[in-house]
Length: 147
Figure 1 (cartoon, rainbow, N blue to C red):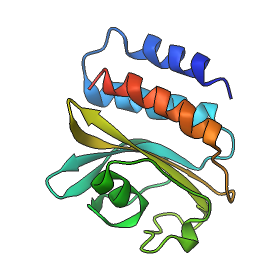
Figure 2: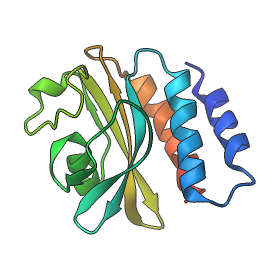
Figure 3: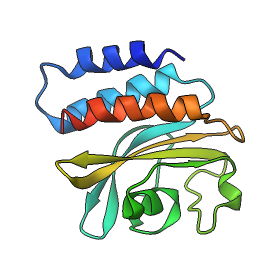
Figure 4: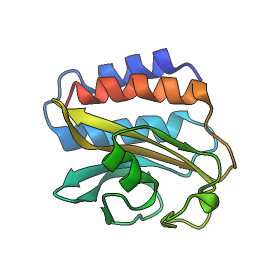
């Protein structure tokens, strides 16, 4: 995957748009369409002590996730990237889609505070590599610039 090109496409899609929801919607569509073997790509936005479902591509999803719960809630609470090779072995995994087998979650920041997370699921075990993690962190930086 050429994450540099994907990032350039993201910047082009969002450069003249000030609406966060529109930008996150386009970002989720771009990521979902560009990555192979993913079945969900989208955002959860922090609201108090829970993450609320934001723009996404894929099957319907959980609408609320408590901080510290599941992969998304844990990544947000600890403010760190989580790359999970097998979600069924992750203690407290929330199965919104039983077909998901692996997941990567990247916290997003507005200023110095966690704003939410970018969440991507795959039906393939161990789908996400360290290269994917670095590439998605690059996209996250561009997303943070438009929040």
